[in-house]
Image (tube, rainbow, N blue to C red):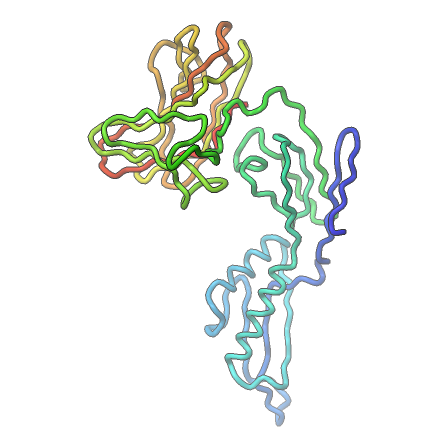
Length: 321
């Protein structure tokens, strides 16, 4: 089998059979149109990370660049053909070779309920699932690249919380634009909608569409969150905006003290929410906080208002650990 799992009391090892490095090339050239009088090739088609022949289709130089990034060095392959006499055939052969070597890597897909793992990886394998390896996440997988190893080791990292935000990835819906475990709290014609084309992870995200008259759009987690008193947590999510003048606001209230989480991680009666930096592309946000000494029920509200008609804000992959 390609993959072998070896369970033990502390870790499991996933062995991946990969293509030998000396079998991978990312700088391709084809020499053709041989002059039998001089015994030399008069034409050349090529593709590498720095460029390509005009007849090679767009994007193939990007594949060579990606391969160079994956393997860390240039390996050149020269093909001499006595029989190719036309440009189209030579360019097609270059493209075919680029595609072949570009695919010579092993991608390991797996499903697990594990929240945190410690991983040692070969350079050719990259986990991309948002729950396993969110970019910049302080509690995300720690990656140690080792090009020489054929082993990928997964070791459980001890932690005391599961994600307290059910359906934080917004993948479960009870109906159109109706996210499970979340209640919409909109004003005017502002609304919260299901986003399926520019989501951060999975197939769904929440999109806040503003009507431009200052009315807000919001989602409130329902039921209330249950957190342990005097315990440190981290709230995280990904968000982006269609304009830089409006973004997500976070409201987290202790229902016993009626205090709200502040932008510095403290608790106070006001303000009742704080904004996060706006970005035109998906950006990771996190805040560390310690719960107060009383009360275990908390209301989490994510909202935004704005005076720009047609502005939209997006949020995805919400966690509290």
